[in-house]
Amino acid sequence: MIRSHRNLWTEKAAKATSSRRKEQMVLKLYVSGSTPKSMKAIKNLKKICDDNLEGGYDLEIIDIYQQPVLAKGEQIIAVPTLIKKLPWPLQTFIGDLSNTEKVLLGLNIVRKN
Image (tube, rainbow, N blue to C red):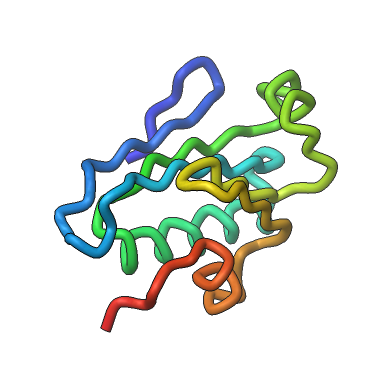
């Protein structure tokens, strides 16, 4: 479920019940309005999270047109951009996140069988 908080969309999921994922993943996805590429990135990321994180994530979707200060603070130069804040190390991905294997590898997620 996406809730609007003054142009900042936030989705919070419950902590993972799986013993393989003890720490909740904190993700921020920067998009540019409802462009096709932004919508594809949102769809791809939600599928990756739903299929592999079992609810153990906190996802913020931030529209840079509505919240340009947040994008400037993170030094976002291209969108869509995904930033994994936690667990460390910090990771950044640019693009529509359609290469699932590359995203899983970068997020250090073992694909669920």
